[in-house]
Length: 133
Image 1: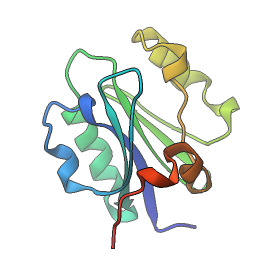
Image 2: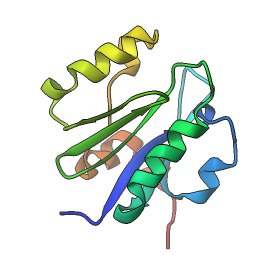
Image 3: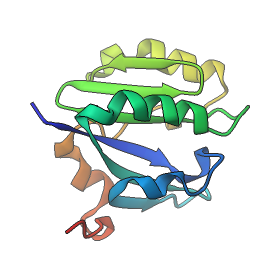
């Protein structure tokens, strides 16, 4: 089992634009259709519960944003007022997707990818990886 989580954090979802500076970023992906960049970040296992609470506190108020974290068979979807602990298996996503829909998030944005370390390179593209050495 991995000792760290990876997370997908959307830069425009935070009220403090400098919040992302606290993370080690391993990849970035700029949206082709929206004014945001998704940051792939690393979160040590012992910090995940604190980070989940911080993300909830720092999400822009009254906006339908979420971010997610994952490792192995664990997927954590973090909305401002609710956290879903599910798995990469889409059959476990029903409640999280339904909740996102109640916030007005379009279905095509309620896909929690990447959600496994193995899928990151395909999702972000090799050219979007950041040198973390």
